[in-house]
Image 1 (cartoon, rainbow over the protein chains, first blue to last red):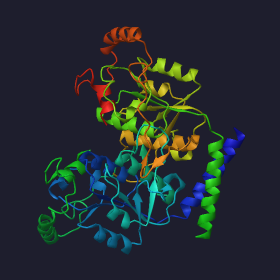
Image 2: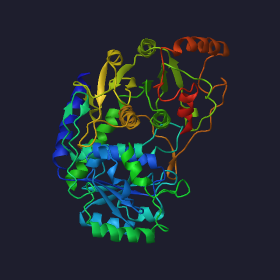
Image 3: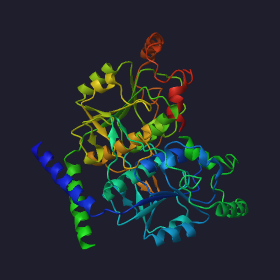
Image 4: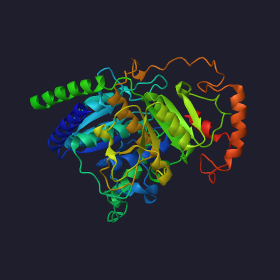
Length: 239
Length: 239
C-alpha cells in the first residue's frame, strides 16, 4: 500500500508538470462522412465536456436546424466543403491533424502522444478512415482493446476517450461543479444570429448556393439511410 | 523535444511497472435503472472491448431475447433482483464497488484510484446514482469536464472512459489486431443453451415465476417510456 501511494503521488506530480508544459494548446474535432446521425449529438456533448474549441464539419452542411439546440449552443461549429480546405485552416492554426484509426503505426492514446494543438479526424463507423482521409493526417492514435467480442468501438465512445485524454494532457482548467453536476453556462448571446457560426448572411447565401452544387458529390451522411437536408444539425442538437 | 521524449519514456516505464503490479484484477459493470435502452447495446460493446468480466443487470430480467446477439455473445451476463444481492456476490469475489458519480469526494478517474477487482455501478442518465445506490459503493470516481456546455456525459461514454482506464491500470493483455480491426473470436459454443447464462432450465422457470412477482416492484427500465417485456436484452444485443 505504501508503495502504491508513493507511486500515485509521484504520478500526480508528473501529471502536474505535464499539464504546466502544455498550457495554451487546443483541440478540434473534424467529422467527415459519419453515417449514423445519433452519434453526432452525443459527440457534440462530449466535445463541449472536454473543452473542444471547434467541431469542424466537412462535406454537407445544413443551417436550418441551428436553432434547436441543447447543450451544444456552447460549441463552436465550422464547415468546409473539402478535407483539403479543412487541412489548410488547421495548418494555419499550427495544428497537428491526428487520425483516430487502428493503423500499424498508431500510438496508444493513453500514452498521450500529443505534441501541440490537435484536430482529431474521425472515421466512418463502418469502414474507418479512407485512404484520402489518412493522407491529411500527421499521425494516428488508437484505443487499446482487450476483449474478444468486438472489432472496434462506437465512434462517439472512441472520440470521447481521445478528447478526454487530450484535455488531461493539455491541462485544461476543470469546470466548476455544483452538487453532482458540472455548471452549465448561460446560453451565449446570439450576436451572429446563428450561435457561433460567424458567417455573414451573404456568405451563408453564397455557401448555400455552393452547397446545392456540391450536394451530389459531398453527401455528409449515408444518403441511402434517409435523405433529409436538415437532419445533420437536428442530430447535433437533439441530444 | 528531448525533454518531452525523456518524459514519455519515463512515463512508459512507470506504466509498465504499474501494469505488472495489478495483474489478475477484474472489472464488472453493474447496471440498475438505466432508462434509455439504446445505451445498453453500446455499453455492452465497450464492456467487451475493455475486457469486462461480467455485465450485471439488477432489477428486471428478460430471457427471451438472448438469442439475437452480435458482438455481445462474448460477454457474460448475470442478474440479481436486488442491489444488496449483487453487492453480496461482488463482496464474495473481493471486489470494490465503485460508483460512477460526481460526488464531493469522488476521485478523478485519470488518477487511477483503483485498488483491486472493481465493479462499476452506473447511475441513471437523468438523476445519477440514488441514495440507496450510493450506499452500496465503497468509493466514487468521476470524469473531469472542462467546457461550459453540458452538466454531464452520456452514461455509456462515461462508463467507457472508466472501463478503459481500469483496463490500462490492470494491465489487461491487449487483443490481437488484424489490419485496422481487433480480432473478434469465434462465437462461443452454446453449451448452456443461452450463451453465458449458466442457469439450468429449471432455474430459469423458477426465476421467471419470481420475475413476474417482482416486475411490479423492480422495473428495470423507465416503464413510462415503453412497456415491452423483451426489450432490455433486445437492446443489449441489437448494437
